Length: 421
Image (cartoon, rainbow, N blue to C red; front, side, top):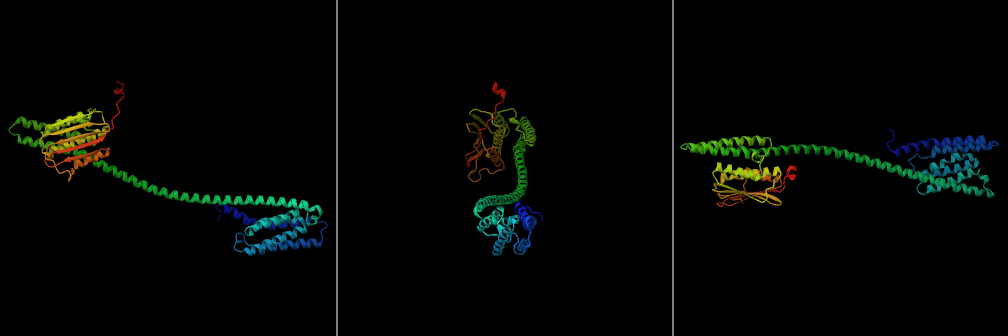
């Protein structure tokens, strides 16, 4: 399997170098020594070939496999010391064996800890010996160039070693970075899968919430239009039945029933289309409330008074619709349950909110126990909460009821024509 990281690539190259380079260097050194030695004596050939053969056997039999030196410390140290001794002997025989001497720098990593420095210094001394022409030159002033070459070799080897160590650290850092990036990518993929699942779940929940809200809206609109309209129509038809002896009164009730049927049908259509109530089309909220109160008075027979406090500035459409529906529901409840003789509505415009109070002098109920738990009031409370408003009900048995609805005072922006005028 091919290497997958910089460290593995480097390890493969080192293994190849350790397996081939020493033997090639030994062979080249031997050939150069034999070809340049003058005169070529049998003694020189014997020493050169014999020591070269011994070095080859030493490499083949004593060198631990690369990467296993930490498991065989003693064997590694013995091998390296013997290897340096062979390098020294060969260089004494002929300086060209310095080519083989460079392998001492390769195998210094077999030495544990700080002994590596000692091994490189000794090897640098042997290389300097070859560079001055052999041990025969170490006489008189011959030591001066030797010491200079020795220092130069130590400096070069130290710099190369430092560079190699830095490269090793960078390679290890790159490997760690790659591993960390791989783990981060795996975590990211996992998070993306989880997020995809959560997104699908949220979409499903949002769809369900949208369906639920639309059902609630339609239920509220049907209650505000069809249910209340049908209740009014029934009341007018019952009144018409009781007025058989009074033709004018009978026709008036039937006419009111027809008008209620038309209005209810129009409101039902508008509710399906999610439009504003008809009475709010082209009219301000106070006017729509007054019209609603007047029609309710005709159908219920209960007098109602409408008052407006403050400056009646147009609100955002959704807020006006909510207040208008609250007025509708409150008046419908008075007609159905209160048995009231009078009713009143007050629309109050304040700095931070707009409130609608609907009160009657009917029989009332125990608000502390029921708090108006009917569907109409529950729907009214929900609509008000959706726009940031609220609903309060005050009632006691025999003392009437007050319904108070309020919304934030978010006013509608005036048209540009109105501002210029």
